[in-house]
Length: 414
Image (cartoon, rainbow, N blue to C red; front, side):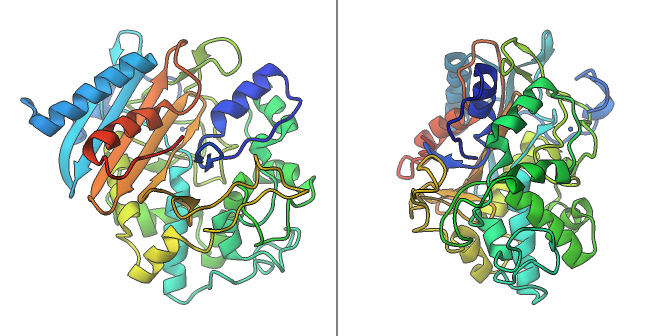
């Protein structure tokens, strides 16, 4: 997610700084719960997402040591981590607390935000393989109310090349979100923000991150398939991969056991676990997961397990490399350079060969990253204390692990 400068007050600026790390980490980087539940509820019985058995081997000890030091350095409340190489577990662990006196556990569920975009991109490529649509089909038949729908294609929505503004950087939206974190948002309410602006550029000619693109792409997929998006992704992605603890929630519910989140976004350190996430994407695609599913997701999406080799090449570069440049209408903070080393693919981010997604909002921060050349998967989720630095600190933990296990391929998020 990108960030633009605005006259927003300090609280809104803080929210911009913290929520815009989901997907546009190319600026400096490319970039749900019943009533609060006891983390020691019945949900843990029978879980296979547990700490790696002791004693630990050399590489496992190294990763645990890196994670412990990072937790202390970054003053994190909790860190969950799972690392695999070639599908073999290196380490699964959880450090710190979910709530005061309640230890964090690997099978605790958290919000996964933009990870769902990698599922949407993969499922779209499956439809292309089957001949049901083409990436360069324009979308007016499915999205007739979208401005310039007859010039915007499925590829443009999936690759953030439409030129639509991002509602998450709109000062008016940020002010409302900050004031009312429990508000439920509809797609129409969210789209009203980008629709109130002219396009940054002619569709397909530049690159800029916008949540509106995936909100609209999901609506198009529901029209194309006649299937609600949560059911479509269960059929196409999470079901085949066995991600039984990755699911959509139509309310702010998070399945038990819950990893609680806290944030200082509004100036006071407060619990944010059950803030309403309806603004993050389309209904049916607001997902929660746990660290074991996140690692499995990293490996499957990052290796193209569910798609053909040709589709996998498109996933990694659907035409974005070479786009992204400032213009008189689009500032350098919005139209970000897409290079071979760092670029947005089709629902994923590619950095020095790593394939990843990096959700960060409402006190939750995570990353799923996969390095195909080493068959190395890293999944990290982190929560904050009042003293945790700004930004997605799960990325920092993952960077340190990557530097130790794959020094030839820096996970250069900054």
